[in-house]
Each structure stands twice: as structure tokens, then as C-alpha cells.
Length: 150
Length: 358
Image (cartoon, rainbow over all chains, first blue to last red; front, side, top):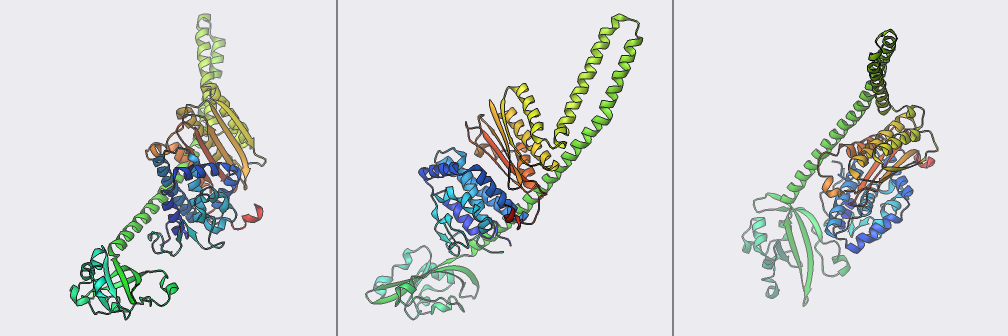
């Protein structure tokens, strides 16, 4: 079976489960950081993301982004934050993690705002050991449903 | 050893056994006896391998702290007294107190977890499959709608407008032959109504098949629409068109439809005073951004409710063309619709060579 969120599904899931742990201050930092990114760079990164993936891969990436966005929305509500830049930042980061190394330097554009409060996001497979939100890729304590390969 | 270990296992919620340095069970709690189907007293003295036959437990020796601190978790298959098997996650922890070395092993039955995992996985597969079916159906709907628009536009042009033009000519002939001057105001009104109806039909044709697009002038076609919207609603607009490349007709039509869909939401729901439309070329495609200063909405409230076909269509059109779309809003901050569509035809294969162009 194909993993739900692509080959890096476990990293995506680790990211998503980490969102609920963010504090209001961290949400504000992510929101501010997202607004600092040049909109054209972000748009280019997304364009590259959809250009370098198959339809099936795109589907998985968009599913990851969508679920992460929902989690971010719930977290923002709980913390009484209402700036959509926050959930957009989380959605961008989840999409980039699901896409992985194939988007090259654009990975940083999409993950940088959230990486400001989740430093392990700055690494992607091929550049550094896979580790997101405290979980390594083969950590058995990480949620297992999404850890099974194709 | 028993002096300090006897009561310890019973305090744990999971099945737990304590083994000595030879791998023999010295203590087991009631949960372990129940899980493996043994009499609790008969577990003492059993080799731990008997519970996990044929599998390497790699019990820590207690000699090397570094080695013993390796990952304590293993996924193994447990064997009950009746030889039935079950999946288990096993945590192995060495303890050393007063020169006595022992290993605490906690065992959790994963049968239910795996069953849940399977059900969840199946559920996800079904959802993905249904979602893909829905997307295919929506794609078909979008294409069918476009074809139908073109057909209706052609019918209006070839049929209704020709008939009205003919009727107008007949009225002019009738005016010349009519002896009664008093009837002329009625004819004037009739002719006025026909001219107005023809004008409305021509506007309808434009909406259905914007002629500006066929000339490759997307910006001009959008300006016509925005100007009309301003006249109708008073909503001010700013159109920033930075298209330094000719947009293919098919892409231009998609963009035009999406912008109109977004603007329809601005007209009907946003209570905005200004809307900004921006078009620019990025990555051999067109980035479009429509931003209003209206009341916005709470996505958590709105997105779970049905009846937002317009927004769904914007997203689907962009994604079907191989692009992406973002629609975001918060209460009081207006709404931003942003999408990008490639100039080329969408592909199911990744664009491996695009890095050279980018």
C-alpha cells in the first residue's frame, strides 16, 4: 500500500502531531515569519512542488498539507489566534516535508517559518538525518499507522 | 533479589516479567500470566525465549552501559501456552542494584492496535479512492460546463440574435407602411425593447465566451468585467497585470473563469469596498491573486458546511490544470484567493527537466 502522505509520511505525521504542542508565542512567531517570506518565492516553491510530482504524489502532498492546516486551525482556535498566515505556514511546511528533497532549495522557503519553532524541520532526507519534532524516521514510538512503506 | 522485586511487577499496568542474567523469569505479574495463558507461579523459571520462540531478544548484559542504552523497544511475536501467537511491543530495561543484575521486560499486546491500524488504513484507502472519484467527476463537470457554455453562446449568436435582428428589420419595414401615426410610439417602444434584448444577449455571449480572451488579452477582458462590477456594486478595484508573456487561450479561459468565480464571492458575500486583482508570470505559468478588504470568514466554521461550490471549483480548476490554489480568510481581514496554473498542459508525470528552465 502506498503510504498516505508519501514516502516521508512519518515525518509529516510527526509535524502534524507537533502542532498541538505549540504555544501562543510560537504561533505568533510562525505567523510573523511567514509574512516575511517573499510571496513570489513562496508561489515559485509551490509551482516547483506541483511540477516535480506525479498526480498521485501531488494528491498525497495536498492531503498532508490539508490535514496539517486543519490541525493548525484547531490549535489557533484553542490559543485564540486568528491570523491565517499561521495555518498557511503549517500547510506549506507539511507540503514541503511530504515532497521532500525533490523540491531542492524551495524546501527551505516553505518550511522556514515553521522551522523557526520546530528546528528539526530544517533537515530533509539527503541533507541531514531525518528527524522532525523529536522523532527519527525509524522511531517505533512515533505513530505507526503511517510508517509502513509501499 | 526477590526481596526488592517481588511486589514491583504488580504495580505496572502492562504485562511484565523480570528475568535474571541467564534469561530465566524470576518474577511475573498477573497481567503477564493472563496474556501468555500461564499459571503465574509456573512462569517462574521459564526461559524468556519460551514466550518469544525463535526471536532475538538481545537482552542487555549490564556490562556496557552504552550498549544497554540502545533502543529498548522491539516488535515481536508472543507465544501463549496454547501456542497461539500475538503481536507485541516489548520494552527491555536492565536494572542493577547492589551487584544484582536483572532485566525488566514489559509486554503490550498489539493485536487490537494492529486491527485498528488495518481498519484505519482501509478507511484511508476508501476515502482516497472516493476523493479521487469525486475529483474526476468534478473535472468532468468543469469541462462539460465549459463546452455547454460555448454551445449556448454559439446558439444565441446563430439563432436568437439573428431572429431578433430579422424582427428588428421587419419592424422598420412596418413603420414605413403604417398609415396610423398614433401607432408609431408603440413601434418605437417595441423596437427599443428588441434592441435592449439583443444587447443583453450579446453581453451574455461575452460572459459565456469572452472575446477578449480569443485575442490573447486576458487583462482587458478582466478590466471590462471589473469595470462593470464597479458600476453595479460600487466596489473599487485595482488590476495589476504583469503578464509579459502571451497566455495560451485555454489557460486564459481558466484564469478568467476562476477570477470571475472569486469576484462573484466578493460581490455576494464579502461586503468589501475594494478588491485587488494581480496577475504575474511565475515558473512558466500564471500566478493570480485576488484580495478583498471585506468581512472575511472563519474557515473552521465555513469549510465544513456544504454549499461553497464556487470556492471548490476554483481549487479544482487550478489543480486539474496541474497548478495549485490557496484560499484563506480570517474574520475581519478579508479574503485572499491565490492560484497558479502552468501555461503548458498539465501532466501526470513530474517535470524532471524543468530545473533547467527555472
